[in-house]
Length: 205
Image 1 (cartoon, one colour):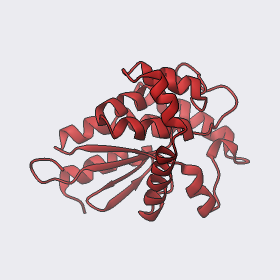
Image 2 (cartoon, rainbow, N blue to C red):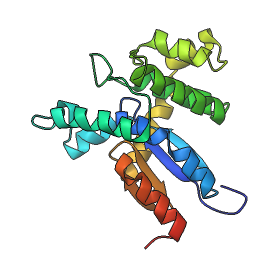
Image 3 (cartoon, helix red, strand yellow):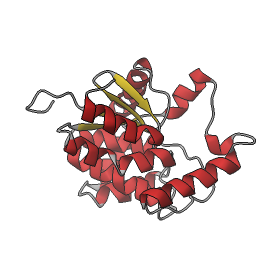
Image 4 (cartoon, helix red, strand yellow):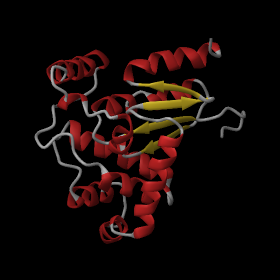
C-alpha cells in the first residue's frame, strides 16, 4: 500500500489477451496519476472461462471477425504497437505466468519488466510465448539466469503458486482480461480503463 494509505490497483490479466496487453500499456500511468501502486497479477483466464462457460472472443462464431477488427482498431486508437499474432492463437500462458511469479517473489519490478517484454514478444514480434525456450530467453533479457528460470518453470512450488493465484483471482470474481479491482470496485475490460480513471478522480459514484 502507498504511504498515503491508498489501496493499490489490482491488475489481472492473461498473457494471451490482446485487451490485457492494451490495458498493460495504460494502467501504470493511471496509478501514478492517482497515487496508487499497481499490482500486476497474471492468471489463467481459461480456468475462469470453464466456470463461466465462455471462450475467447476470437474463437466465437459470428464474433471472431468483429473481435479481430476491434482489436486492431483499439491498437490504432491508443497508438499501441500491435501485430496480429500468428497461429496458434490464443496460446497457453502457463509458462510466462510461472516465470512472472518466480521473478516477482525476488523482484516485482523485474517481473513487471518481464511481463511487458512477454506481451511485446507476442503482440509485436509474433513469438509464441507459451514455449519454455522463449520464456527463458525473455526472462534472461531482464537479468534472470537462464538455467534458474528453466528450473523454476518446472518447480512444483512455482506451479502451485500460479494455481493459488488463479484460484484467488476467481474467488474475487475475476473472469476476464484485463480486470481491475480498486477499493473493492471491479472494472472489466480495456474499455473500462477510462471509467476506472474517472472513478479514481472523482471518488466514485
